[in-house]
Amino acid sequence: METIISKSELNRVLSLIQSIVEKKSTMPILSNVLLSATDDVLKASATDLEITASAHAAAKVIKAGSTTVNAKVLYEVVRELPEEEVTLKLIEGERIEICSGKARTRIIGISAEEYPSLPGVGLKVKSKIEAKQFLEMINRTTYAVSQDETRFNLSGVCFELAQEDSGKQPRSLRMVATDGHRLAMVTRPVKGLELQKGALVPRKGLVEVKKLLDGEESEVGVQFEEGFMVVEIGAGRPNTAKLSMRLIDGEFPDYRQVLPKDQGTIAQINSAALSNALRRVSLMVTDKTKGVRMDFVPGALKISSSSPELGDASEELEVNYAGDPVSVGFNARYVLDICASLAEEVNINLELHGALGPGKFFAQGDESYVSVVMPMRLV
Image (cartoon, rainbow, N blue to C red; front, side):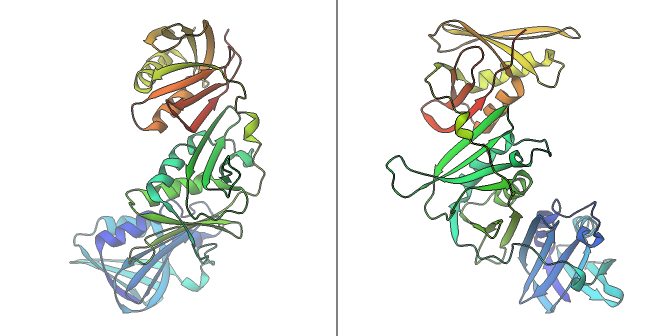
């Protein structure tokens, strides 16, 4: 194998696979990146056998071939190279020689024949979705995924095609996540996505998808097949990239039971003002639950917190609220996550269902994105 490639392109494909490389595996070769050069394309691939990534870059291939080399070491070497043009050459002893200007580095590799197959990336991608829309939907759900590894059926985001009220063919993609204390649900129209039944996609895989979608303006390919979700960008371009991940083999809970069925009392709050006040008030909370008290009276909201170790804090906001006085406790971090996911200053509707009922959060005039937070008991 011998190829010449620009440093920026080589750095790009190597950066895409860094976090997928298995660092503590019983298979040492999974710490390596698989490099393949053919037809004026250099392909870098990596897998931890659950998530697999493959990225292409245009290159001048002098001699086709493949090898594997430690992914982290190669990435760090390439970042420090002095010149823009890089030559990669496979030499004796399965070593890869990296030359740029007067700099030369040789890294010991392992034969590509010993690298395991790349699960899922060989599947053809037939459906497409707007990259910006997909990225928005990921950002508005992944924060609510459970971090408890023992609750595997809550460790991902549920994908399903939502049925239209008219009963016609489904035309909307719905993504739902919950950790048992809060729920995030977003529904957006899609054109040709194929999904026969619900799919449970691991959070770790969606974090990698976010990196792939960053800066992507066009449509992105998405396919659910054979227990995998496959995402592809740049199909037909020299710099295409593909990511596959095994779906979680579990049953997502019936999230509809969590959604409030009755109409509650609505308070309209500016998201930026709410976020700023919560950050300040929650500084006086020492426990992990970050519980704050929210007292609603007509026209005003008082947010307060206290702890024996630090002291207390309170802040009052003007809100559009005309219901009966009510006091409810919420985890401040959960509400802050909702504000952050909106990524802009908007008016939030908080639908209250009494002191012990769930709080339903959504942007004013838009219930296509809903978050539900269970209350905390006030003492």
